Image 1 (cartoon, rainbow, N blue to C red):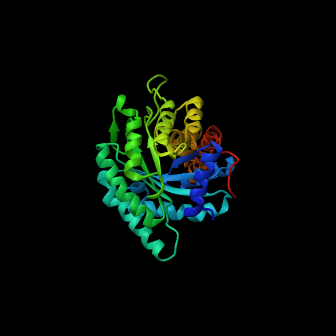
Image 2 (tube, rainbow, N blue to C red):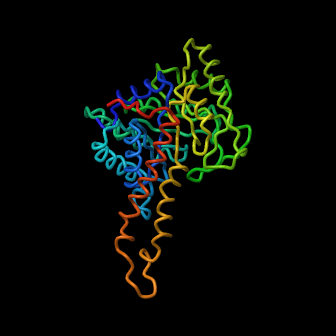
Length: 340
């Protein structure tokens, strides 16, 4: 199936971990960005993950409506239909749900998916993220344990964050300081609270200096070696090699070396948003500047319908974003690894 079943999603993660590669997880906000993301994965011959943030969900529902559940389901419905034509497997994920948004977003989605499972259907989404980075770790893990139980009923995978990602995303901000580095003690606390798979599978975003957005060289100090240190410490405690399925947040703008080391240390999913936003918008800007006398009705003229037709610049935007996703697949080594 073009949209991964729970079993296929688990297989995707297992294949990435065994093969030392990771999937780009691309934020989408519209039908155009959904198409661009799937096109990029198809061109790279890579399976992939597309994900919806709370802001993206609200926008997709109608910018004057802002219904995050209906926007999320609308994007999933579009992706489910369109993905049938591209020959790659796509997983659907919700991204960065902080505590205050759980009751109006992820919990309702999990409840809907649990009902789907009771009817013998597959859940609409394959995973959901709870971002507890803005609350104490103890509280973070208590909520995560409750959501992991709900995820089991919905046959989905939970993603959690242990540590803090700097910068800003959807109104949530964090300073760039020592709090951006998860410790081995944090990792051990996570396994003690959530188990090592026996209570349900989960993905873990351990932070190693990650920052949302793009910064000039030197502003962000990534230390991917932290991931290996935590894997070893927790693995020694529970007798399991590389116990965590890791997620790399704030991946836009990272160097090829940093990405490679993170993947070597257990990252199987890397979020990418800022870079793909720019890759989508930049060709549109070029089109508008180059065809300004066609997209604008200057000096009483009528302009050029072929220039201001949204499909003209929309195709360029989709191609630009798709090309950036191909680059991400190559960096993460997922290019050419598709299941189908």
